[in-house]
View (cartoon, rainbow, N blue to C red):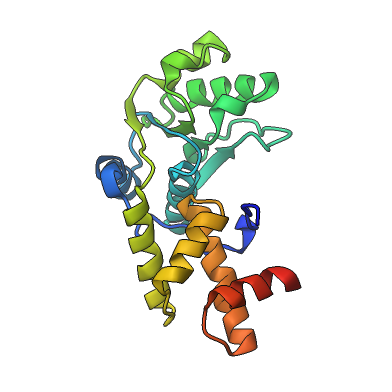
Length: 229
């Protein structure tokens, strides 16, 4: 059976409190402090690490937390076909997957960065960005953008080790009132995308399907769910 990547749109909204930091505790603490101070941090922050380490989760969590405080934010990622003009009302700009930006997106990202770092009513705006590589290695980006990505705080995010991913999944299952037996966990880890985001979405699918069928989560249940999707 090939590994499957499930629809991330079914996952619960990310939050800083739901992020299992592991060895990324320093980055999480920094984001919590920068997000919840009266005015978002004026010092740029860049997160980097391979796919599945939680970069997008953290950026989305920060965006939701800031918007929950009634603040406006700008958002740009590699899927943004037509980047918006910079808005002086933004309290922060968040830019994800910068390593994938095309020429137009790089131009917008540089413009947003410069405007955010220009005082407006005596305040700077927070710039939070993320990519898969450290700034020095992204020589394919325009130089003025690449150098600015490394201006402030830079955090290298590490993937959770397998025991940590298992612990997170068990905790999430317990919160749902589910039991994940060892053999079920082994099956999930060996047949599906192993990053925590995809495994969490899989658990969401299993929870829904188990409720619909009134069955416990077992390997036959997982196979039945896949056959009926």
